[in-house]
Image 1: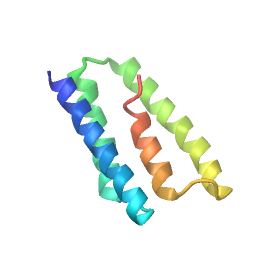
Image 2: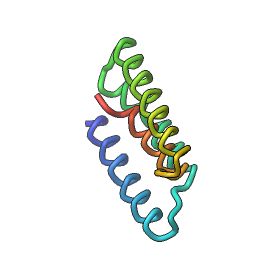
Image 3: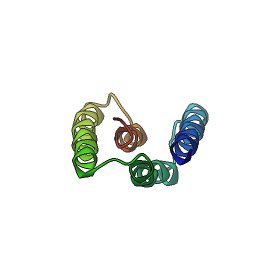
Length: 92
C-alpha cells in the first residue's frame, strides 16, 4: 500500500513538473530533489535489496551521462537532465 502511495506521489510530482515546464520553461530544483529523495523510500517500501539499489544508481548515472551530453549540445535543458536522472532512480 505504501508503494502505491509513493507511486501516486511520483505521478503528481511529474504532472507538476510538466505544467511548470510548459508554463515557465523551467522545472524547479525542489521538485527534482523531492523526486530523487523519494526513491530510497520507494526502495525500502518495495523490499528491494542492495543489488537492486546498485542497479538503480548505475542506471541513473548512465542516464545522467547521456542527458549531460545532450545538454552540452543544446538539445536538452538542465532541469530536464535533473528530472530524468531523478526519475531513473525509480525505474526497475
